[in-house]
Length: 81
Image (cartoon, rainbow, N blue to C red; front, top):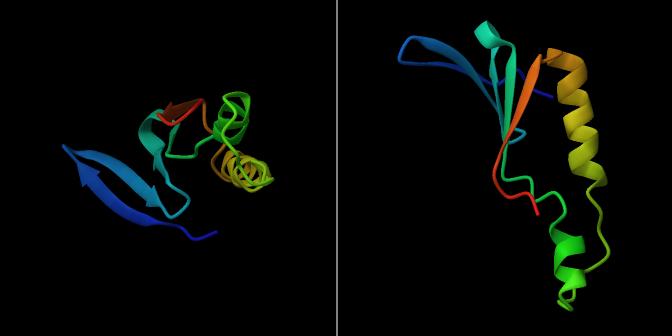
């Protein structure tokens, strides 16, 4: 897992992570986006075929991010079904 790219937005330090996430150290907040958690289950329920893949990789990545950064808050930015 790489360190990410340090940027500042209106004076707020943010680390952009390659795992579709961002770390805001000042507020101990982890932002995660576009993870599609629950998408396959939702589509299958509606009768739309989805190949058997799970969310295991995404959950493993989330667990690693949680262990690495120890956020006080996690905010999911959309794409949850």
